[in-house]
Each structure stands twice: as C-alpha cells, then as structure tokens.
Amino acid sequence: MPTLDFKGKQFVYSHHLSVPFRELRVEPGKSLPAAGKQASLDDNLIIHGDNLEALKALLPTHAGKIDCIFIDPPYNTGNEGWCYNDNVRSPLMKEWLKKSANPVDKEDLERHDKWLCMMWPRLQLLHELLSETGSIWIALDDNESHRLRLLLDEIFGETNFIACVTWRKRYTRSNNAKMFYSQKDNIIAYRKSEKLNVMKEPRNEKSDGNYANPDNDPRGPWITASYVNPAKKEDRQNLVYGIVNPFSKATVEHPTHAWKHGLTENKRHIEEKRLWWGVDGKAEFPRLKLYLSESEQLVPVDFWDYSEAGSSDDGSFIVKSIFGSDVFDNPKPIELIKKIISITNNKTAVILDSFAGSGTTAHAVLKANKNDGGNRRFILVECERYADTLTAERVRRVIKGYDFKGTQREALLSQKLSWTDFSKNQHKILEQVQSIENLQGADYDNIKKEIKDGVLTVTGERTITETMPGLGGSFTYCTLGEPINIDSLLTGEGMPGFDALARYVFYTATGQSLTEVGAPSADGLIGETSLFRIHLFYQPNREWLRSNDSALNANRVQAILKSNISGKRCIVFAVAKFMSQKELTDKRIEFCQLPYAVHRMLGD
Image (cartoon, rainbow, N blue to C red):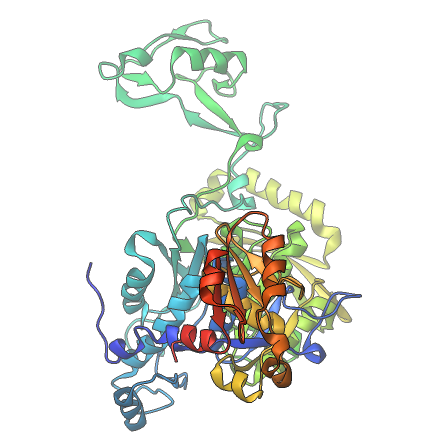
C-alpha cells in the first residue's frame, strides 16, 4: 500500500505513546449537572485543554467506547493562524520548528508537513478511542483532503474507508474568485473495523413523499416496482409463466423477458393483492406494490445538499441567534452533525469532537435526543480560551433556553424539483404542501414556500421575542491536571486522585478502559477483565505512601485470595511489598511497584 512521507514523520510516528497521561479534573463551578446531582465524569464532558493531551487522558475511561467521532480540524488554507506546538522529543524537530513560521501562514512552504505532523498522533489516539463498530467523520476542503486520505489509510486501513461525502455548503457563487469558486466541503468517513458492515439513515419526508394511496389501500401509501425481469426468457425459464389479469381475465406473459419473481412468490402477491394493473386495470404488465409501512431505512449517498445537511449560513445564523452577534467564524450547521448522528443509528451513542469550536456537536446531540428520546452523550475538547465563554456557554444556553429576538426558521419540507417534475406532478405537490400547512400551520406564524436552485422548500417561521425553549441535558466541565508521572508521586506535588490513578493503572495493565472504579477495600480490587483482577493500594498522601500501611502484606494477600473465587491472575499495584515475588507467584499474584511501575509504563 502506498504511504505518505512528510517532514517530521519519523519523529511524530510514535509521539502519541510518549504523551503523558493527565487526570481529568472536574470544575463544578463551570459544569451544569442534572438537578440533584453533582458534576461527574460519567456525564457529557466539555474538556478545556490541548486536544492531544485530552485524548490521551480519555483512554483510561473511554478506550474502545466511542461510537462516533466528528472533527473539524484547521483546513490549513494559510489564513487560519493555527500553531503547531506539540512537544515532540526530538532536537531536530525542535530546531526545525524554531526556525519556521508559527502561526502557520500562507507563505509557509512547510505548512502541509506541519499539518500532517499535527494530525498524525491525534488520529492514532482517536483510533484507539473508537469502538469496533465506530466511525470517524472529518470535515475538510480540498487543501488537505487528498493527503488526509493517505494518512487515514495508513492508520485505519484502506479497507475501512467508508466514503468521501461532498457537502454542498453554499447556494450562491462569488464572482470575486479568479478561477473556480468552491461551494462544497468534503466529509471523509472511515470505520474502526469490518464489524461495522451496514450503514443506513432514517427515511425522510422527501423519500416518503413518493408514496401515495390512489386506491385507498388499507395498508397505507405505496409505490410500485416493475415485475419484468431484465433477463430474457431463455436465460431464466423458471421465471416464465402466465399471470391472469383479474380485470380483463386475460393471461399475460411478457413476449421476450421473464418475470422477477417465481410462481410461489407470485401466488403470494396475488393473495395479498399486491399486483397493480393501473387505475383502470388495463396496464400491459403488472407492477408490484411496495408499502411505506414495510419500507426499510435508506442507504446513505455521498452527496449532501445544503437543503438536507444545512449550509454555512445556517451555522452562522444559529450562533448569532444564541449570542446576539457573530462570535465565531464559519461554525458548522447543526443539520450536518445531526445527519452524521442519524447514520450512526444508535440512540445511546457516545459522540466525540476534539476540535469543538463553537460547540455545534453538543448542540446537535442534545437536539437529536430531544427529537427521538435518545440518550446519546457527547465529549467536546477545546484548547482555546473560549472553551468556557463560547463552547460551554453555548451548551449552557441551549440546555436551559436563551433569549432570542428575531425569526426562528425550521425546514418542514425540502426536495429537489425541476420544472418538468412540477408540471407533471403539480396537483400532487401542491396537495403535499397544503397538507403540511394544514397539519403544522398552527405551530408557526408563517409558512414560507419557495423554489430556489431547483429545490422546493417549505419553511415554518416563528417570531420569537422572549426565550428559546431549552433542550434539556447536562454536562461536566473539565480541565487537565498534572501529568501522572514519577516526579509527582515522589515529590507529592500534583498527585493524582485514587480514581484517576486506578483508571490509569487498569488501562496500562490491560489495555481496556475502566468504566467504574471499585471503592477502596481490604483487597484493593479496582476492576477485572476476563483474564485479570487488578488491585491498587494507594492514597494521594505522601506520608501515607512512605509508611508501612501502603505496602502489600500478608493480610492483604489473604484478602485478595479470599475474594478471588474465579482463580484469575491478580496484578497488584502498591508502593512496597513484605513478601517475596516467589511466594506471590505461587499464589498467581504479580506485584507492580509504584511509582516505578508507572514510570516503566509511561516509558520515561
């Protein structure tokens, strides 16, 4: 398989392994917990900090548990002013960055190398966080899409490529452009593994609008499919037979082609009255009724129009309506993320956005939950100073409701429509629009109907002068603590809490995340896998760690053996032991000394 080489790749290739683990520290004052509850790491999360370090901090709790990742990294156009400042342990790398432009600008001839150096370790960690049935979706324009594809092929595997979706984000053109003016972005999607082998999206008004019920069939609206097989009679003789038209009583057989269905299926179709011979019963050949009530979800396509996935203007309009001004450039529209969420098709999905920006992903998750009663969770990571004042503040406002003065618009119908289609189906289309007005007109101050750029749009408009209703929900705001390393354990400064260290040692020992930490007990058990039981004796107290109370002794060994009914191998983390390793080995116990075990696992 071809691979992409770029300046600095040899230095960042394993950089994600050397990034230190940090404790996620809850900030209660900036969190918005559910009523009667305290802020905790089990809730939706908004993390303020470098996304590389935040992703590493999530591994002990979320490795292999993220169902959907959406990221909107810098497009690297040269106009964004992003900085590459990862602390890669290489003198050559540091010397290179010292001499080159930072922030990255359009004059920087090495900006593509820097962008790839920035993305590589983050994609590695995102890959570890994804579940086996998870998928990642990355928004980019044409500046880096082709290079990103090669990067993703190498990290995720080229067989796990799903699609490169064209998202038409603009509906106007600029004549100021000298060459082509781009109306689209790319959404590049990969899966974690082949365990994700089917993707469908919910049906929508556009697809359901093709169904009708001209004969008042009690089974509801339907469409028809041809009964004639593309194969000729001589090729499929088992599908050649006569069908009686119940209206004319004539026996019908196609002169050259076979039928699509065998005699047994045909008999069932007749018994269930699924054959359609036209309004007057004079159709030359029958067609098969397919009912809306029996229809499956839709296979996604790789072109998303702004009419279904939102536009750039939609994203800006929402942010402006929440904050009263344009406080963020080019936010993604909610509809785009909601469409990705709908394809994920999991009402309990955990959705991660490590380039959170204005917080659109959280907004989309909360709205999806409100619409279908789901229990999806979001994790946002934002490194900039506005993580609290913009990213989290947007989420606070949409949860509680916010003051809004202006017009709220909601698309009630959006479908592509040519004038030919309109002239042929004018009565049906007008009837469909009238039905929407009759059913939903009372919910809005105005129903706006227009055909623009070949799209029929029906929009409900509501004048809001008070408060936009809240979507409900909660979240915990976190910052990154000090690195979990040998220095902090030896000096007692910035020592991790028990839960943080428990999750860390469990992950480093087993490669699995620990959902719930066992309470401190006589045997020190913090969790187990199908093969191991992991024990930890620790307190974030320097004096305690230096005392005999912190050691693995005979009493603790007996407690471990007594509780180990399954007979699994036990791995014990403690500062010291008062028994030989030979004695422990005979009892299927492996001792790992703190802080040296941590030091060794970190690779320092």
